[in-house]
Amino acid sequence: MPAIRAAVAEELSNKYDYTQEEIASALGIVQVAVSKYLNKKYSNKIAKLKNYIKEKGLADDIVKSIIDKQEKEKIENKINLLCENKELLSLAE
Image: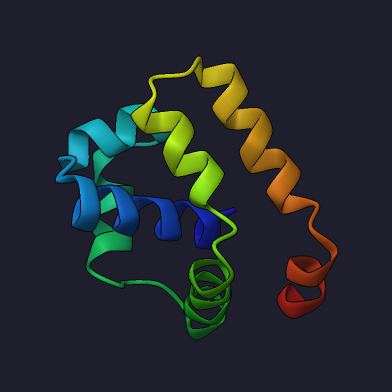
C-alpha cells in the first residue's frame, strides 16, 4: 500500500500541482505521510515497487479517480484491487 500511495502522491503533486494536504485528504492519510512519500523517505523495497507501479501505469486509474473527485470509497476500492495485483505481490515478496 505505501508504494501505491507514493506513486499516486508523486503523480498528483508533479503533474496536477496538488498540495500535500489535498493528497492526504484524497488518500485518507496524514500530511506527514505524504511529505515522506514526496521526499522519498521510504525503504528501497517501496521505491522498487513504486517505480514498477509508475512504469506500468498501474496507478493511473486511481489518479484519474481523484482528479475526477470520485467518492473516497471508490478510490479505496481501486487501491485495494491494485494491492491484489499478482505481479505486484510477487515483487513485494
